[in-house]
Length: 569
Image (cartoon, rainbow, N blue to C red):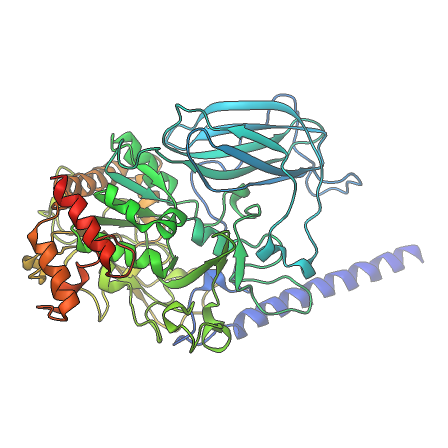
C-alpha cells in the first residue's frame, strides 16, 4: 500500500512539473509585446524571457580558500541555512582620503574583504580579515527596498589611501567561517585633480546596472512582489547588486575595455554618470570620453554635457551598443534613479508639466532626441534575440585598421556583432564611415516567439564634426560607435580568436582622438555667444557651441568660462 501511495505522489509531482513547464512555455508564446512608441523590444528585460546570465571567460566565482574544503552541497537536502553574504557601499565613487562605508549582511560569524584593482590581471591590493558578521533582513516589500534602500548599518569603514589616485575596483567579500559564500561590489577612485593623469575619461555604467538590478523585489524591468505586476519606476543605488556575483548586469563588456586601455598606457581616469550629472564642467578636463558595457540610461543633464563636449571639439568613443536609449531623473541626493519607461506617457508626473524631463525613450515624443544624431547609430529592435555573428571590415584602409593586417571583407575578431546591436537611423549625421557591418539571421534558442523580423543588422561608424563630414561650423569632435553590446569587450579578451586585431583597432581609435585635442577658446566662441544672445545664429549647429560650460543652458557663466579659457592660452 505504501508503494502504491509513493507512486501516486510521484505521478502528481511529475504532472505538476510538466503543467508548470507548459504554462511557462505558453506564457513565453503569449508574451511578445508590440514594438512601437512606448515599448522596448528587448527580450532581456521581459520577465518571461529565457535566463541569460552575464558571461565571460573570466570565472564567475573566485577560488575557494584553503580553509573551506568544499562548497555547500548541491542537490541534496540540507537543514542548515545556506551560506550567505551581500554588501553595498555608501557611494560608487571616492577621492583619495575619503572613507568607504561597507554595509554587509551575512550569516557567517566572520568574513573578510579584499580590494582588487580591475585590469587584465586582477591584483589584491588591500585585505582585512576576521571581521565579525551580522545578519540583516531585506526590508519588507511594503517598504519598497528597491527604491528606498537596504538601510543596513555600516559594518566596516575603510579610508582610501592617499596614494590611490585613480582606478576601477572590486571589493570581494568572503565568509571565513562555516560554509563558503562570496559577493563582489564595485566602486571607483577618482583623481583628485581632473585630467592630471590622463586626458581620457572612462565613464562607468552604474545607471544601467541599477536599472536591471532586481535586489529588493523590483527593477525597472521586473517585479516579484506578490499581487503587484507593476515593474519598478524608481531604483536606489544604496543596495547590493543581485546579478553577476554582486557586480551587476552589464558588468561584462566594460572591464575588458578599461583593462585594455590601461594595458595600452592610456591610464584612463574613471568617472561615473553621477559626476557628470552633478558637475558637467568636469568634462572640460578631458579630450576623450570612453563608454563601454551598455549606457542605456542617462539623464538629460548628462546628454546635454555629452553634446556640448562634442561641439567644443571633444571626442566620444562608444565601445558598446544600445546607449542613450532611455531618459532618467535623479532624486535623494542622486542616490535614487527614476525611470518610468513604458509607463511614462501615462504615469510620469513630469508629463505635461516639464516634458523635457519625462523618463521615456529619447527618440520618442515628447523628447525627440534620438541618440543616432550624436552617436551615429541607434539600437535595432529584436537584435538581442539573435545569435552573434561576424562583423565585416568595410574599408581596410581606414585608420582604425592600421597595423591589424585585416583586409576588406575580413571578419573583425570572433563574431563581435552580438547582443543588442545598432544601425544607422534617419537622424544620423549626413556623412559617416561605416567601418564594420554585420548581418544576423539566426534566432537564439528560446526566442523564436519574440521575433517579428527575419534578420537584424549591426553597423560600427566613425565621423567627425568637420566640413568634410557635413558640419561647416564644426570644431573637429570625433565620434566612434561600435554598435555592439558586449561584442567589442569580448573581442578584446585573450580567450577570443583575433583579439590582437581588436586590441590594435581600439588603440588606433583612442590615439587618433588624443592626437587631435579640442581647440582652445577663440574669438569664434565669443561670436557664437553673441549670435545666440542676439538670435542671429548663422546655422542651427552654430548655436550649439554657445554652451561653453556644458550645463545645458547658455548664460553669463558661459562668458566667464570663455574669459578663463582665453586668458589661459
